[in-house]
Length: 393
Image (cartoon, rainbow, N blue to C red; front, side):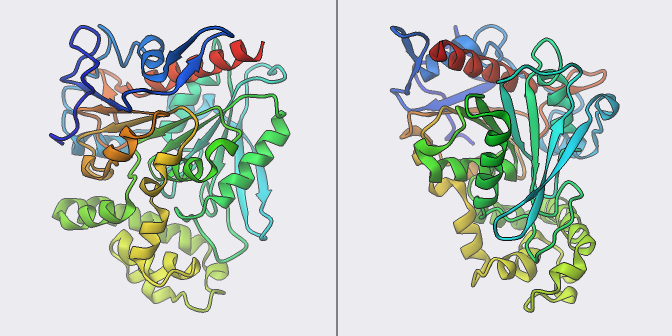
């Protein structure tokens, strides 16, 4: 963690360098504010996101959740029950060209949305879906007045309680599914509607991998990555090295994977190489991926799957403004695996590293804790959509 340092261009006067670290290329891409005016991306963020820069730029974790483990464990049980009835979806089944299916959950607005309403496309974490509290909590902000954006959650194969019809489940190496889903979304909302992509955890890895592959061709105007593992091989190794991380986090995520497999058992076992007893014997994510994921995706080894799936390989090729937010005490997406050098050579990326936050946590306040990270996400979205409309005029 000690290697994660803020750029020297920021001082204590405009950034709380003890609490929030910022990393970027020294000459970030210009953000066009008008026909005649532009500003470097990092300066644009400094002006547009007061939660990240200036006197309010500080994350103070809930006093009884000050460690990464406590933040992460609280995130796993946090329900955000107030959003359960407020945020509802209209589901659309997406049939892929290759015959597989996934689902798109469109957040139901309180009032009819205008044509070309800014739209946020959200990717969930491993085995997650639109039901997750970190998604519903954010939608309660951005998909409700006064912001009132359109939002759609992409539930990957087998996720969000969408059953599969081919022996292929959620896979971090496959970006073609999201690419196809994004084209479908763009067709539905109209090509003139601005789109921002937002990914959480493994979903952010898929988003950034897609952006690195797609480069300038993506229809997205900006991207946001939250709690990204970046390097799946080394993240997995570190997860398995610790007794607690292996037996708590990896075990819990493996059980979730196995539950999805069992819901789709009859279809998955049509793949001749996948054996039920091997899948059910898995105790860690690596063991599950060895028994199932590598086989359904035709990889010779789990390591090859992890290498191919890691967005760190292509992040330097991203060609739209990308905000990455990671907690430096995250026990799952560890600070060690953040591709600092690759981020520094790409003028399109700003990396924010908070001292605390855990994995998908960032809970603040003692009474009724809520997620601090929703604030910078929202600030960035508002700023990027505003810029789009200024340029479009």
